[in-house]
Amino acid sequence: MQKITAYKCDNCKKVTVTKQGMKKHEAKCFWNPDTKSCMTCDNFTPDDYEAPRLCSRGMDLQKGLNTGCPSYKIDPVLIF
Image: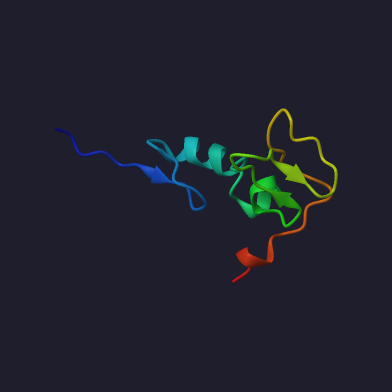
């Protein structure tokens, strides 16, 4: 067994072995409020077993979550 150095995202559970890889990940992480993505937006309703993901601002989420949204509004639950 070998001991390694790893880097964990400040916003999610992702782990990488390189600092550069983690910086790249954090710059697009859906859980990073700085990326203005759906997961931290007050306009977003996560999907459940019976309903799809929804955006109250009308953003198309059929192909996946968005980042850099012009209608982004931080979820007040996330404000410390």
